[in-house]
Length: 323
Image: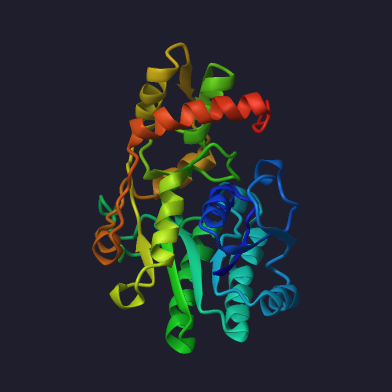
């Protein structure tokens, strides 16, 4: 299958490229930035693409004629609050440009990556715990606002133009690739700095609890939904979940493998506010029913797999010495 990825240089792209190439797909990976060193051996073609440039997006889609698009390009929550205009341009206008290019190039299927950032405290009180698919959406960040709009655009293009748009709302994603400015980054740095610095001062409270997922499960969810029988899907966008640990529970899990690592907590006002606005857990019953979603990694399973991976990446110089 001929597949195109936008935003391939990010955290998800690193693992998704490898999975798609391993399955034998013909792949074009795109990003505004050059191919990062961590992606050097991932395989497939790499092309520069600015998703805010409508003409460039249309030209590439018309030239490549992909059968399936994974739209990953986005400015994440913390970075988006630092530059809301850039977040709007990339996340909102970029998604519009990609959907229009799909329509004009007659792309059969688009996979959209949404986020738990679409949630926020409703005016009537706290979010349900766990939060279902159809919870009221009151995001408190530009990232969340643009992801809500992207979800609605996908549903619109599905109904109006019969483009097979599908998407997942990702929890915070954890992988051995360095993160890109999300509010859940504290969780990964507990692993990275636990290995390289023997400790970490988290920008979140010890009792912070949000939904998290290990990247191999996240990539598998994208692939399984992308290939699912359309007739069995009852939604455009699906919640998916794995586990929801407190920050100090992550520290305890890491401490099993790194007993000398010390973790402290110094909440950052802006990022802690974002974390507190998200649901503590996600109800993903629809994904489990419609396309058989089921996570394979729990917290300790992720820790057991991730710590050795980070050690190897540090040895290879694939993770920078500071952040």
